[in-house]
Image 1 (cartoon, rainbow, N blue to C red):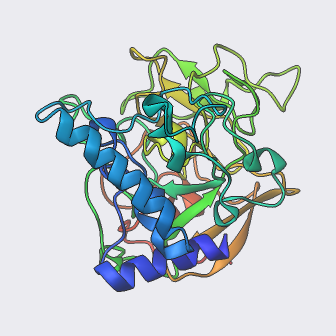
Image 2: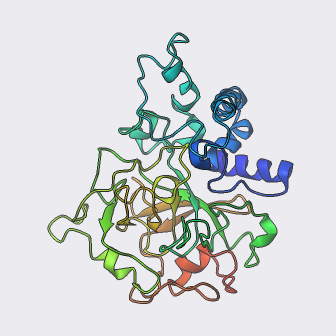
Length: 324
């Protein structure tokens, strides 16, 4: 995680802002922050392959928002390095593990995604302490994020008015181990609705009472950890429920993968997760961190209802809480 944090710092040094959580190229502009960060983790050659192929596809279909490399195409690993097969060869930059993006405690992150066979990451960008609309608001272009990473905009460190040593940049998540996983670590379930007027205890209640490592309901059709996909269900997390809690997506067309939701940090470490703050420091956060009252609904400004954990994720809550 320290190396991922360092790549974010050096990107900021070069551009005076962090990349957006999404809006970095790809089909429907869905590429994650991890793509523009590649040159800052000694992956310049991979970055150039990805961006060159994406531009070629976009140039071939001007005016088509869906043109470009699509993270949701299931890659044929037997053909991806075959120049004679243009369809699969275009995806060659999206495969093979990147050590900087993998936590040693999660061996599965070094393997191809169970969904689309692409590269995986354990490091999720912080979307703050909201869950209902971090991906898209009612008009699909007005997402709200209280975190340092937002869907459509880049933000500078200066946006973290609570302080760079008091605001989370990223945290761990176990990657999806199987399709439509209902495991607490790496999975997500689908709620009928999780709006601004509904409280996060609804998600917490999806933990299976018979097996506390599992959730109930229908598993989310999305691959937690596919590094190229910037949607919250794939590379985002929120500081609402404490680490290693259930994760829940809103039920909209696309089985929830194309939506906002309450996606929790998780890890295979005992008792908590690692996070990195905007100042670059890495800390271990316990599952028992104060997370406020999950019967309260989210807020758009001011103090987080989700305690120390919530305020650490919000860049401008007015609460300069310490992670210690």
